[in-house]
Length: 195
Image 1 (spheres, rainbow, N blue to C red):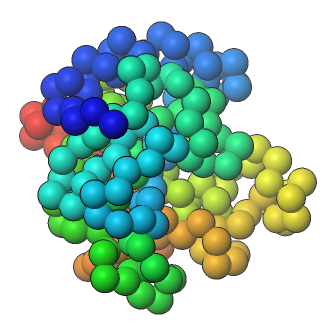
Image 2: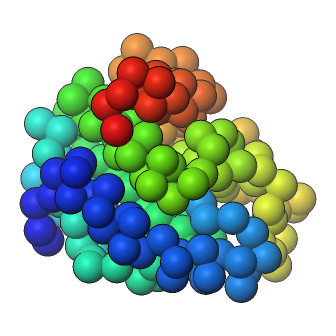
C-alpha cells in the first residue's frame, strides 16, 4: 500500500484512463466509481480497493493502474475504481460502532471523487459514482445479474435486505442520503477548484 496525494492520484488516473475506458466499454457502460467502507479498523487497508482512506483523511493506493480489476463491488469491478474508508469495524445498520467514518475521511473521499471524475471525464452523478449501498440496491439500473443469486429485481442493498449498506448513511447524514451527500461535496470541490 503506497501513500498518495491528490495530485499523484490525478496523474495515476490520467495514466489509467485509456485502459479503464476500454474495460468499461467492453462491459457496455461508462467507467464507474464505487464508494465503500472496509468494515475494518482505522489504519487497516485492503487490496480489494484501489484507494484506501485512513481516519485522518490520508490516501493509500494499492495499484499502479486503476484499470486493474479489484474485488470491491459484486459483478461491477471491470472498468471501475473502488474507494474505501478504513473504518466501521463491528458496525451494524443501526450503529456505526466505535470506528465510524470521520469527517476527514468523508471530505477526502469527496475530493478523491472530484479528482477522479475530472481526470476520467466522468459526470458526478449516480450513474457513474455510487455508494456500495446504492449499487446493491441497483439504483442505476445496471443489474449485472444479481437475481441469479436470489435477489429479485437485482436488488440486495439496505432498501431490500440488511446487506451491503456501506455509506447508506454516516454521522450527521440520514439513512439513504450518503451517496447524495458525497456526490454533492465532490461537485462542490470541482466547482471550487480543489481538483
